Length: 225
Length: 231
Image (cartoon, rainbow over all chains, first blue to last red; front, side, top):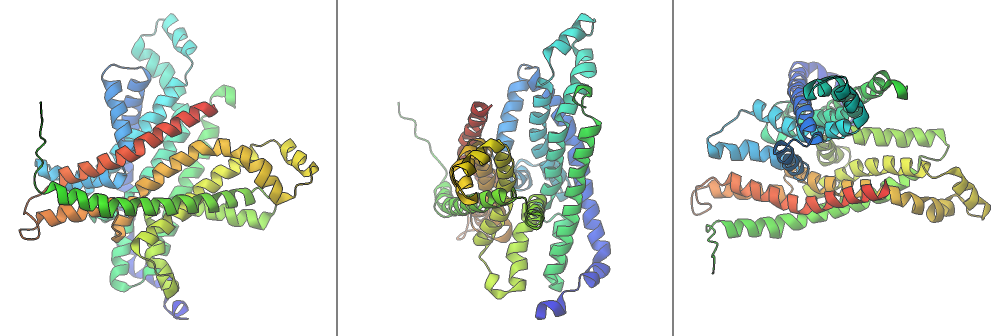
């Protein structure tokens, strides 16, 4: 009975909307920087891996395996607690985007490696025959075709990046999760705070998933249409 | 030639605590989460293939919600939200983390199972039906054993994810490997007699990372081999 009396989502939102909005903006800001960075890392290192560029390729393989086989929370703790030991103290915002960018970049370089490797070598041969150099072949042939093949899996990685920004709760960065839980810790409106978190994250994640499906049909390679 | 590796004095008690208190907790949470995810996920993933709309909508909702939420939010729903509904639903941090991982993991397994079950040709269903199997027997003895081959690689991947995500318990104070490491790093930073007044965050968290790597790496390689064999 107590539940019915005290649960008031409308009041919770109208009293705290400014703070919650600020938290959401921080979540989106961190996500945007991390996604942009992960895209650049993914394309560059994915290309290096696919073309077996010496040294860079091996270093990338180590980076990917390290990032994939250790929990992201441990990576966050290493950046936040261990870097200051070497005189590098980053603020919470920087740690937030840097940690999810490093994580997302590792997964994304695998996405793009697979995409670039899926481009038939006949296309590249054709480009060479037409007089394209290595860079022109990559920019005009491998990237547009392989990039599209990698797109759905890379968007899945970006969705995970957005979800992983919630982990910044452990370093107290005031993105959405930290903001909502901080409010509820004072006001005891726990269920209202959890409702807001659930609704906002599911809206974000579900719209991104819908975008994948839309893009997949829009950017499908001509022969698959 | 004898090479004596001289470790600083603080290392032994820290490593002992992480390995004797943290590691068993991580393994316990992961074992519960994997078992629960497999049982519930295979059940839900099989049930959703039945052509009965209300059940499909319900299961689809379950899958999309728990795959969509950040796992940390699910952890807080279990740890902070459930006790608000009923005091009987109050769980320890480690149990809460395990339950949240079951919700997330079972949604993952259900989606994979649905795909695997639907990939089995309908002749197999018809053949089993012709042999007199009912719905349960058909799935238990004919369909799921064939689907298992396709389910194995994602299942190993899930195991890796669950072991890594069990560190989320640290966010609510559950003492598993990561929380054990963090509390040791904090203890050492105190002046004697509690600590030694030194910061050893890098050594401790790098050690934690290595520990997880040693557990995860063989499993991700296994998943890759299984995947290749299937192709």
